[in-house]
Structures are given as structure tokens and as C-alpha cells.
Image (cartoon, rainbow, N blue to C red; front, top):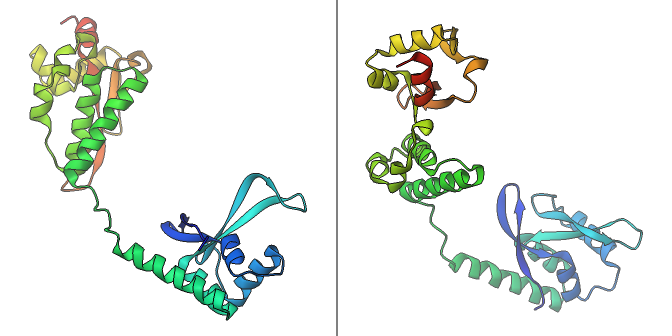
Length: 249
């Protein structure tokens, strides 16, 4: 049976399909394909993007000079078309589709990834992104660990601290929140924010600290999400080396 089973995305699902031309050929239909396939759709009351999809063939033109269109039918629709032919060939095609369905059901379904597998995959994605954007791997690892903690409730912090990449962090790459900066400089978070404001690096708008144009390149915004309330926002992190020099600390 020369009917190739492939897959198409139909209504958001990956579905087994067969090319209408293969079905047409196996049924030994004598009328032209274009008229036949449209007649089958109407006769079986098939619905586009549910029972079949149309796929434009790039670079291929029909006899009338239009872009060639292929019809891909679901296996279930293929069975209907085969049965409607009411021929021995139609019976053989139907049986072929039934066997395809049987084999598909026997194949083990892929299990969804575990939270740990997803977390590791996401961490790798952060590392890959760091390489693309040419930023220190240590920064990507820090952000990846935060993302994993929020998304999967998995704590990679102990592994992060033991990572050799963390030994490569330079002063110019250290980004800290005001509370952390205060801990380094012997200030409270409120004092740190007040000094950053006095230095013209941030202003308070609507209860949120907003960086000024003067701070461009020396801060980053870090999203946060409360797992209990569902509220979210962002915190500013500052380049420690820059803050020290600016505040004279």
C-alpha cells in the first residue's frame, strides 16, 4: 500500500494524516484529482482544519499557474473516503488505515518531562543564551537558578555556590539589591536607596524605585513573584563597583 502516513498540526494537535493524492492513486480513480478531492470533502461533509488541512507547496504551480495545494486527511477521514468508494480497493485502503491506527495505539506515549528534567533543560537554555549574548556565564547561572526556583520550586542555590563559574565573577559584574549593597557598605536598605536617589540614579514613582537615565548600564531589573499572593513586580539590582565609586564608599 503506497500511502505515506505523516503528521500535521491540526487544531493545535499533532495528528496522523495521509496525502489525498496517495489515497486517490490507491483507489484507482479515473476522474481528475482536483475535482475528485473536492467532491470527497463535500460528500463526506469533512471540515477543514478538523478532518483535513490544505498545505501550499512552495515553488510548485498547478496547471492553471496557481500555487499547488496538497490535501492531508486524518486517518479517520481517510477511512470515510475509502468506504464511500464501495470497491475492493476502497476496502483495502480502509483496512490499511485501521492497521495504522492499531500500530499508533500500540506505540508507547512519550512521558512529559519531570520538573527536574525541565529545570535542567531551562538552566542549559540560560547558559546557551549567555553564550549568544556574550555575557558572563555566572550571571546566566544566577538568573537561571532564580527562574527554576520560581517555576519549579527547585533550589539549585547550593550547586550555584559550588560552581567553578562563580569564581570568575569580577567586581564589574556583581549586581546587588539595595539590601545586599547596604550589607556590604554598612548601611540599611533605606539609607542605600536614599543615597542612590541623592546621587541622581533613581527616583520614586508610585511607590516604586525607577532608575534615571544617568544609571543606564549600571542596573538591571529582576522580576519577582510571590507564590502565596500571586503578586509580581521587579527589584533593581545595582553594579556594586559603580555604586561604591559613585557613593565614595
